[in-house]
Length: 217
Length: 401
Image 1 (spheres, each protein chain N blue to C red):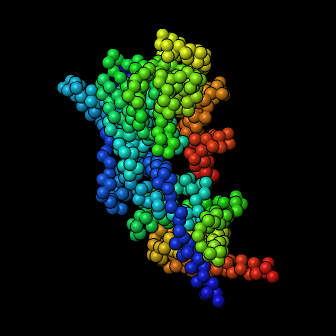
Image 2 (image 1 turned 180 degrees about the horizontal axis):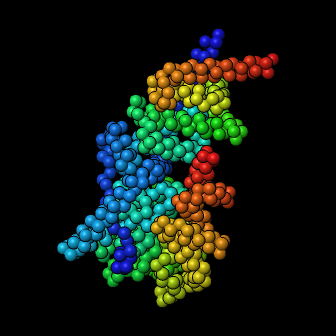
Image 3 (image 1 turned 135 degrees about the vertical axis):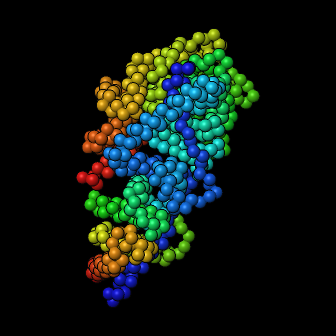
């Protein structure tokens, strides 16, 4: 028995758990991360998980089998960017996390496109089933989901620069200054990307509409 | 018209940003949080090593040498001045193996108060240890007993003293490997409806929950355990099974058609913890107790089934590979794992060995080989317990190439 004790390495000092009642400021979280503090890492995940999860869900149109992996990849990217000093604190940590989640989701969409995986709207349709409401409501929700699925598809087809700017500005709700800061470009360039992105997306959607009209007639 | 189209595109995107997201269940959220925390810690470690300059690395050795000297001196002084301090240091169980997400929590297992545990972490009295899905952990108690937690299991360290160790099983299934204890030393496991007390033995305890009904089941593979339940005490011997749901005291042999040898049926990790310390071999059960006599057949089956030679070799190889990998001796670890995989293709440790193989390759810097191994693992074990980790490795490589 004494042997088994002797084999054991020295005990580690375990820090006290973070006081749950006190909300750490972004600065404190960043300082803790720089120290590789385990407690702070857990707090960071608690703080940002819902933002990351919701952003991935919105950009991808739901949670699928890869969702866990994407959440983990997003957090890995968040830590890498924070550790690498890429976060200039011009926006909140939450916005930064949402921006990274957008990027991860966009990469996933583009990868799926290259793997020829179909954008499945059936998940949305299943969720609509069984909900109370009129048939007209259900129809309009289905149409709405299909429209969003088309938007996602076109975002995956557009240039990454334009898609990222559009997602940050219109989906995450960043200001143009924040988009510029996150993408490390000037405000004017950010504005130009957003405008060009909207133009291209609207043209693609219009082409879709005219195609379906021709198909219908 | 064009402007209206642009406006519409903008509205669609904004609608996407406001789209209602299905709520995560509490369990899903906790699971995601655990995975994310684990990844953050890994990323922090990786980031730290990437940013280390050669000058800083050189100074680090100087600092490490200085830092190592201070505790040694302090320890020597403490032993001379306060011998009782040693007893304090021995009261902490330690995590000797962790795979997947393993957390230390408060007594109520509150997710908000949990912290990730890694190999070598100490667990304080009163703390709980829990494993997430597809995760495993081994705790070494003060008396040398090994406690293997299966996935989605939780135990609390109630007491860890020189004479008595007590754990509470809150969820899931736990396998115990208890060496011959010193005279007067006992180890007990408390479940909601039973207390299992042991001396030197191997056994597993599991809690099954059906609605509000909780039941405890115990399987003994070696030695004897004492069970206190429903106000009565009785002994359970090797090869016997007891469940509080059956209400049979002492256990009826028909209930337990030699349920077996956990070393063979347990998840691979549990077996791994058994090998290195040359535990007592499975002994033939004496049938002096009439209650045991009835189960002599099952016990003999148990002895026959006990994988005395091959499993011990497999365990030894696997345990040595882990020790080598933990010590940074990756070539040796890989050689052991290769031997295990080649010579024991039907081993219950095979999947774990394959996982450790790609981990060791990755940690040794052989990234391309690690990716190939991870892909092979995914192809052979599409639902394997380390599929997320393997996917991650394969995915990262794909993006970098």
